[in-house]
Amino acid sequence: MSATVTSKGQVTIPKPVRDLLGIEPGTRVDFRRTPQGQIILVRADPAPPSRFAKLRGHAGKGLSTDAIMALTRGDT
Image (tube, rainbow, N blue to C red; front, side):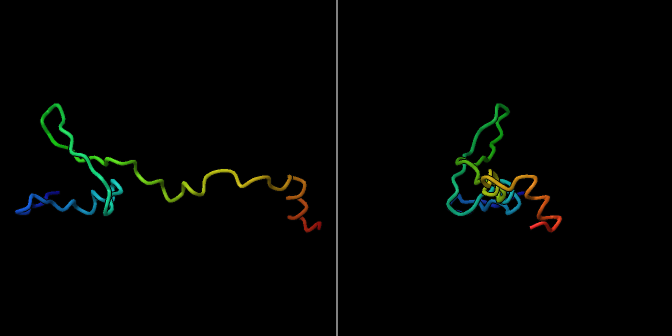
């Protein structure tokens, strides 16, 4: 992928790269130089949690095995 530098020195980061790094408006990025002299773009702030992260955890005390079996059998 390539991009063109504007007269102000700005470059649009291609959408596939933004999507890969989770870059949205306001996201901070760093430009780092590798030992080989290449410049790489990295996300400066931590990536947002995945859309599944908020679903992780424990829902609290649930039903006992006997209670679940009673519900599945129709024993109420």
